Length: 358
Image (tube, rainbow, N blue to C red):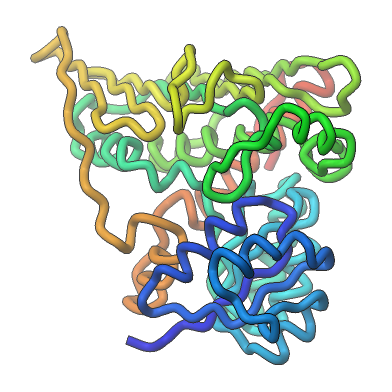
């Protein structure tokens, strides 16, 4: 197996720390450089991962030219995904871009076109795709356990994006209050808000569960928190030829789902023609109800092989074995998820139901 050279560029999103850790722990990876215009944002990675000072850059061009990575991890603010993909793509590298796909469908298409001439992989990382519960859900759907899927119900979020750093380390309420006025998560121009942050999880994984079937129209309602530019709560209803599905996002859950599941519980409940399945984030079981067993039963989640445990391992396996990317990481499924997000965003703005934006 070859050693894959990895670089991490732009630390806007704190998930960069997690993604770099995945690379550091992979036996076939070597982190060759990290880069951010604000050096202080890289200090935790330098300290925690033992990155040497000569591998730390503030100019992405210098980083790419000196380190010549095979794969770049990108974690910019949502509305800068297109800009940063256009900057990095000409260096002929594979890209893992942290969710969401983009702040708009037009920006997502810019990213696709920027990568096309270079023949390299563009993967979008959705961290919920690495939950064993949701992977088990997909297997059960594909095996026909509940017949044909006709409804997807998604509710997800957390206390808010500023409550955590890499590795889910918690901040204090005082730190959150201090950062909120300047954080890109709360700026409309940077693609902030719970709808743009979390809806793509539901619509992208939901589209994967539905085997790429697209809705006809979308209706969205968002809250209007005092003193904020962006929403913290959104409810989206998508109408398909076969029925309705619901996707709800929430910054401000009572607890974080990775520590204590809040109520409502975060995750998916799906309905098929022959049964139902509930799959909650990080759970060790999924609950299956069928006509044969209407009382339902808990089924242990599938153990995931290394190649399916995180985005770095999965993309490297894809490159090594020339295998297709898992659905949510692929441009095709993520783009359809982005179409629903764009339509929901515009529906909330116009306060009316809209046909799916193409």
